[in-house]
Image (cartoon, rainbow, N blue to C red; front, side, top):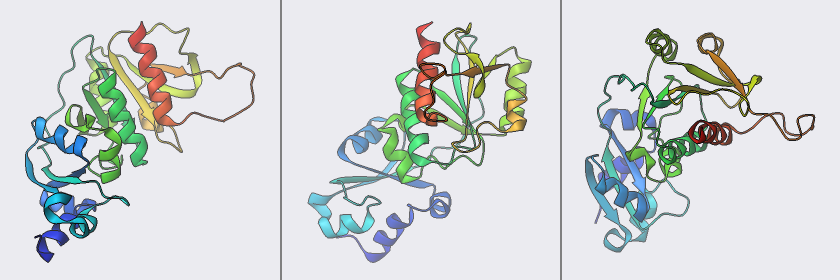
Length: 236
């Protein structure tokens, strides 16, 4: 049986304030719990409906329909920004706020073999339960680093690492010459890439609609745009 204090503590991890204080986050679902146990992350505890009962699981779950398993996992210490290899591809997220989009982008990075994502400090917390669930386990394999994005990109440019960005105006990505390595910047859902970061982009890329003169959606969802961009870089 879980005590009232245990239930309160686990439930509080749905909020960033308490995740930061405790240094813990939750993952839910059999697959996600298995991913956590198989990773290098420290798993503090695992709770199963078969052991604690449906009522207790419903009280500690962040989901509207609780899964049969939940784990409390320690947030790893944030390390420095690694110097990327010459042909390494990285993603950089500028002020992304939607948990589902960020979780999906982490999952995409894992699919396309991108091991490091840089992010501005105002990007949504990746240990938000909605982000964690959307990663489908990729959160345990992709390094996510919050940083001063303009300063970091400036330093990378100084080392000769190309910086790409997606814009509503720019070079047609399908006709552009792309390097094997570099940093791809993706902007926020509502405002795109901020001016301070845009000033550091070497190559502005544009994903054209079809047909080019077609009138339809004004823009693509940022996660979909990330998938198209990563795919185009990887196929070259």
